[in-house]
Length: 329
Image (tube, rainbow, N blue to C red; front, side):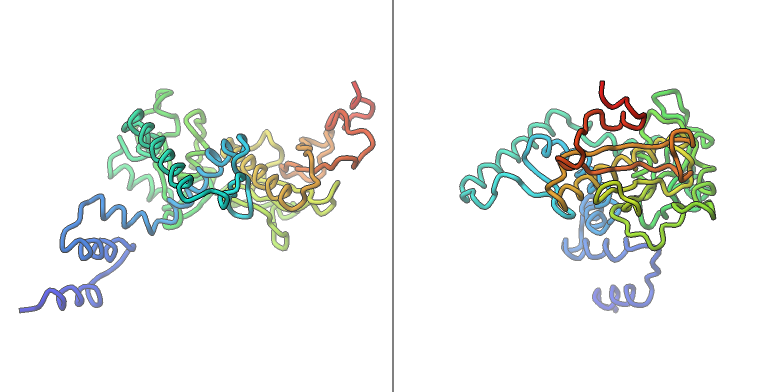
């Protein structure tokens, strides 16, 4: 009779055929649980290894609590993370423990108040769509996001309602598309854009466009839909450009997720600039759309121009200065 050890070892080393990391993680959870593990425990083991979820919550950190706490003067961006502005090292162990308890109490009170609604924004992507429909939608998309193109093994894919349910969208397969969680979050429930034909457009590059090929440029920030890099002809030091990866002539040709992705990079680039140069006291943010507005590169781009006190004699009016004589009013 084969011993449990030899039976399991033979399966792991000889018989197991893996299409993902789930089988060995489930076996580990069962072994660590003495032969039994709840579904939740196994799912938690998967979650610990799921980089897409870490990416998802990294975006949440930057968009929500990071911004709010920074606005209250409690945190600031530092490198790839955040630093607490009040000196944490000055806290006694008792003070630190009390603050931690207060945080736990605040979490518990909010969870009790919201209940199951707390994570409704995540659960919405999992319900009301049959497994067969989900499979067909993902297969039809080549297991890639139909907007940014990221594959399913790099980032979790949602089956999105093109016309949102709240606006009367149906669960019919014709109203479903595959979007990664980031693009789906950027799209939101207000946008009804059908991205199923966008992938080919997103991959297209204009040979004559200097922004379509970012090879050789030092990217200071990027996400799936946009990139940021320093302007080769800076108006001021650290002048930065934010552009969509897809070739689109102007801001008005961008899809809503692209606009949101560019806004995220504006925030990130601004934080980097202020960390790199404390003398920066303001910014000009602008876009030129069309030849008559001064656009010289027909690929949408946002200028993020750092300003320092005294860099011009009279800064009043800012971007109004694009028309001579209109800055002062």
